Image (cartoon, helix red, strand yellow):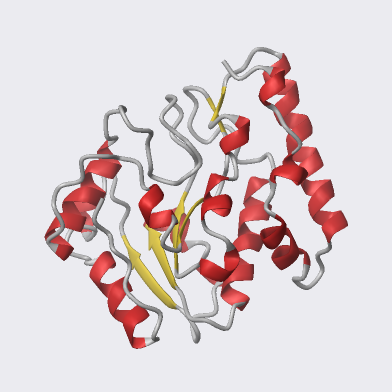
Amino acid sequence: MNTPSHAGNLLKALPREWLARIAALPGQSEASIAALLADIEHSLRAEINAGVSIYPLMHEVFTALVKTPPARVRAVLLGQDPYHGGQAHGLCFSVRDGHTFPPSLRNIFRELVEDTGAPEPLTGDLSAWAEQGVLLLNSVLTVRAGLAGSHEKLGWGQLTELIMQAVSEEIQPSVFILWGNFAASKKKFINEKRHLIIESPHPSPLSSYRGFFGSKPFSRCNQFLCEQGRGEINWTL
């Protein structure tokens, strides 16, 4: 269980490079970001003190931002909220080693193999992508155990939309991979003249056959990055 001792100070945990980028956006400041995070932390502490388990653990909430600093972002893969069964570790769609691959991740790997010819992944930990500049960002960064979407109104969406805007403001072109209607709704925060947006249905079994399979997001991402002189991502895990 997430105990109160797990709930660190979110402002201190947020990487300084990211704080500086989002605080520099119009209408934002370090004080406004601090106030937003304080409100979120207050809500999380109340749930934890009431005995509610929260995923991922608090020290992993900003893993995506730690592993992928703003200057290294080459692609953004946007998820909705973390897995709620204990698999989450701060990277969207990723699971800790030793956990069964969730259905969406299995479909992502199927498309990866068919698109790139990569071998079938043996791990569901996508850290290798994050370390190459793929920002594996959930829109909502925490969730109650067993209750998908339970933290959608905590304020995380406001923070992650600012993160998307900060990436969009970067001069270097990047790729935004948006799977499903929820991710597509965030397109308004992206400068489409500078960056490539790759959209398709979500890899969930409910929608994967409506256009996710065959959408070739990995090779299309690499083609754009190469055209922009930013180099390919090695998607092999």
